[in-house]
Amino acid sequence: MTIFMSSGLPSRIERPPEPTLDAALVQEALKNAGSRSRVAWMAEQLKLSEDDLLPRAARFFGARPLMMAELRAISPDFGLVSFAECKRRNCVVGRYADQDALTVVVSDPTDIRLRQWIDVRIGNRPTDIALATAADLQAFLVSLEKSLRAMDAVKVHTDRPSVAANGDGGLAISISNIDATESPVVRLVDSTLYDALHTGASDIHLETQPGGMVIKYRLDGVLEVVKQIDSLDIANQAISRIKVVSELDIAERRIPQDGRFQVVVDGRDIDFRVSIMPNLFGEDAVLRVLDRKHLTGQFQALRLETLGFDTRVLDFIRDAALMPYGLLLVTGPTGSGKTTTLYAALSEINTGLDKIVTIEDPIEYQLPGVLQIPVNEKKGLTFARGLRSILRHDPDKIMVGEIRDAETAQIAVQAALTGHQVFTTVHANNVFDVIGRFANMGVDSYSLVAALNGIVAQRLLRMNCPECAAPCTVAPEVLARSGLAPQRVAAATFKRGMGCAHCRGTGYKGRRAIAETLPMSDTLRDQLVQRAPLSQIRQSARDAGFTSLRDAAVALALSGETTVEEINRVTPVE
Image 1 (tube, rainbow, N blue to C red):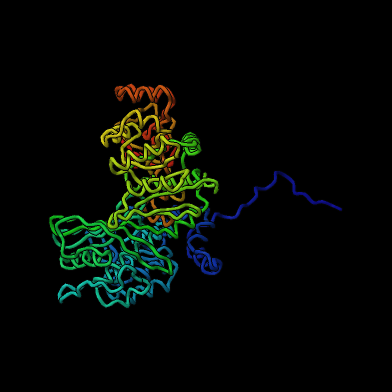
Image 2: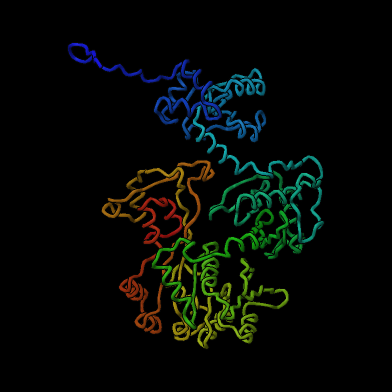
C-alpha cells in the first residue's frame, strides 16, 4: 500500500468555528430542542450557563435582561394575566413602581405563541419586554404563591350586610368545597385553614387592626403575612366564627378564652387549638395546627438521629432515657421541638416491656402501645390530678407534657424519687435557668437535684436551601455584633440561600435541632444544693465539656449550613 504524504510542514488543523447566538442557532433550537427548553439547548451549544446566556439573548432579541433582584421589584398584575396562567406559561406581566408601561417577563424569547397570547391579553397597552432565566422566574412565582392561595378566591363584600357567622357544622368543618359556601365569613375562615394545612403552617395568627385584619402563618418558625382584610366588621365576624366552632362565648370580648375544634380534610381529622386574646381594636386569635394522624405516620419510625442532633447530644439523651428512674427535663420556648424530642426518646425505649403513660395538653402525636391521657380542665382533669391517678396505674415511665404549676412540679419530682422514670418539659431560656424555675415553684432544691438525670435545652434553626445556597461574604460589623472574632471565622465558609422554587423563594429549607445538655455530676449537684453562684456552676459545666446553644449555632453558621442572621435570631450573643 502506497502512502502519499505532502512535503513540508503539516498544515494547521482547521477547527469548526465556535457557535454564536444568531438567527441560525435560534432556527436550530426551534428544530432540534424537541421537548427540552430551547434556551437551555442554546446555552448548551454555546457552552454557557443560562445565567451567562441571558445578557446575550437579551441583546439579540431586543429585550432587557432581569436578574432576581430586579425581578422581585415588579408588581404583577394578575388581573390581566392570572397567577395560574403565569405559572403555567412561565411568564409575568406587571409594573415597576416608577413606570407606567407594562413589563412582560418571559424566559423563552423564541416562544412566538406565548408572545401572541400575551399581546391578545394586554391589548394596545405600552409594554416593555424583559428576559429572565427560567429558574429565577419560577422562584419568583413560587414566592408570590405564598400570598395567592385559596383565600384569595374569597371575595369580601363590605358594601352590603355581611352574613353572620353561625355554628353550622359544629366542631367538624369540611373544607373540601370552599366555593360551595355562601357565607363570605365562613369561606374566609375555611380557606385560611385549608391554605395553612396545604403550606405546612404550624400556627395561624388572625390579628385585628384599626382597619381590618391581618392573617399570618408560622412557617419554619417565622411569621409570614398571607392576607389582609380591609374591613373591621369582617374581622370581628371571622373571630366570632372561630369562637363558634370552638364552643367559646361569642358575647365575651374582654377576657382571654381557650378552646379547640376539628376539621375534616381528605377523610383525616385535624385538630386546632385556639387562643382568643382581646386587644385595643377587637380580638386576636392564634390557632395551633395539630395534625395527629399525619404526624403519626411520620413518627412511627421516629428516632433521635432524625432530629439532627449531634452525636454528643444524642448519646446524652439516650443515656438519660435508659435510666431506670429519675427525671429528664427538656426546656425551650414554644415551638422549639421539645415534645418531638421526648416522643423520639419514648419511641426508642418503647419495647413493650414497660408501662408507658403520658398526660398531655393536647396529645400532639399518637404512639402505639402507649396510654395517652388528654388534659381536660373543664372536666377537672388537670396535670396534677391526672399525674396522681397515673401513679396508681402501675406505670414504669411517665411523660408529663408540660410542668406549669407548683403542684405538678412537686408530684413529678416525687414520682422520679420513688422509682419512676419521668420525662417532661418546662419553659426556661437555658439549662441553668431550669433550677430557678423549679425554685420559684417551691420545689426543694435537694429533692430536684436528687431526682434529675439531666437537662436538655433546645432550639430549631432554619437550614440553608441545598438547591440555591451559595458562598457569601458577611460584613465585618455583622460579625462584630455576632460576637465572632476575625480569627474564629478565618477558615469559615459562609453561605446563604438565594431563593428558588425548592425553598419557595425564602433561601431556607427545613429546620434542624440544636441543643445544650447538662448532666448531673456529683460536683454539680453539690453546687446546686449549696446555691453556688451561676458563674461557678457554668464554669464547672464548661470544665466537664459543656457546649452552649450559641456554640452549636455558630458551628452550623461557620460550616455554611445556616446563616449568621438566623443564629442571631434564635440564640443570644454570649
